[in-house]
Image (cartoon, rainbow, N blue to C red; front, side, top):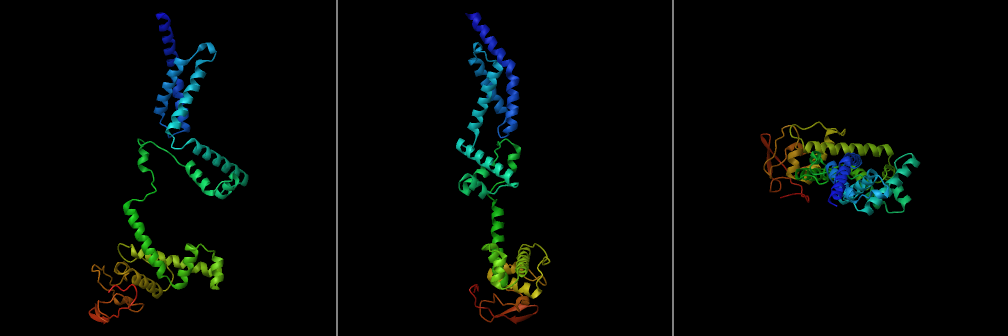
Length: 320
């Protein structure tokens, strides 16, 4: 009896040793199709499945051990990947169906099918299709992967959030300071998303006139951002309006934005950075508009060796 047991164990060990290369081959083949699963883990799971296959193998059934072991190893791989998968079976089924419909429509239309077209073909909401396509594009990596340190995140860093908030604040101020018609066109095109033709009919001008005003408004907004965030000398403007129109635009921004805006948008000639929150503007803006006078109405502020009377305009933004 003992000799039979020893012979059986020796045959079992021989089956395992002879088929270990099969585990390595299957692990490499599976890893090539599912790169998110480490090859080493697949090899370990496959080796364990090979041992259990050798223990359960019954040669009297007439099935070669290699074919039997292959099926058991691949089944173990599937169980391991299913356990590691972030998506449930229902989610995977939905992804597979959505991708299949998208590919079929793309082949029939000769172009990439839209979300609305896929949703119509499947009879599901467009949001469901969008979620399925987003899940299909999702990739998973291990924490040990060096490239994981370079993965892009949806949440900006604190300094990025602060910069984005500041840029948004400046941009909103600049939009409010645009000339009336430009402001109306920017609001209609970029906020209300109205067609240019409809805006042209409303204003009683041509389509090209609206496009020109929109382009010039965008250039003025770019001037405002470039000027506000400039570290050194005042950058060259990209807008094509006259200097007086541009300076009046900056003046309206200063009126709405206060000393911080004035510090950034002060004219290049004779400009100095304002450190005192109560510092006043130079007389370069006296022609377009007078803002932020001294605490008393009609007070005087120093200017280039003399004093020029400035009258504070009583506006909602006056900070006296």
